[in-house]
Image (cartoon, rainbow, N blue to C red; front, top):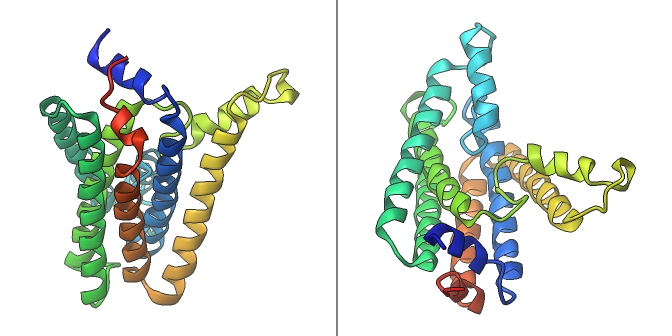
Length: 239
């Protein structure tokens, strides 16, 4: 059995999956917060949802007002570089637990840095601060997505909901299905919605710094809490 297959099997064995699902759910909330701040505060750009970002790049390239080719490309580039770096890190670390916790520490630190820039800069909607925040958030999300991809937990990607929503519909009773993993799928959708609502609500009243600070605390707190569970240690157990 390959290392990655053993890893995917280990996260669903012996009750390890439930704490992991809670952790991934909280990260999904963070994705909603981050993209709310990015889209509303950084000038119509996403830093977590790269599917949406590619679409926005198309809008910008076509000359639609309010969209920026440069901002979209910077976000995509930072995300891809983050994913590359995380991929190299994954090939050098044998401990899956250490890999996941390291990714969360990196992401939390980068979001905290973005929050610091947002607090100190006059504006994050233009100028150098905009691009610094895009790079920090995009890189952090690239690191996270690269590692979450290796976990391979069905229907919980933490940033993209298209296939999750497809599963909800295609496996529903209306489609003749058995509603397999309904709770997990619905929970992922609800988590993203709550994060987007909360991020937008706080941003519109307090600016970008506070919601990003909250997002950073959630990521770091999730990592710290998950590290104390037996589920985190099971990530390295051979099955």
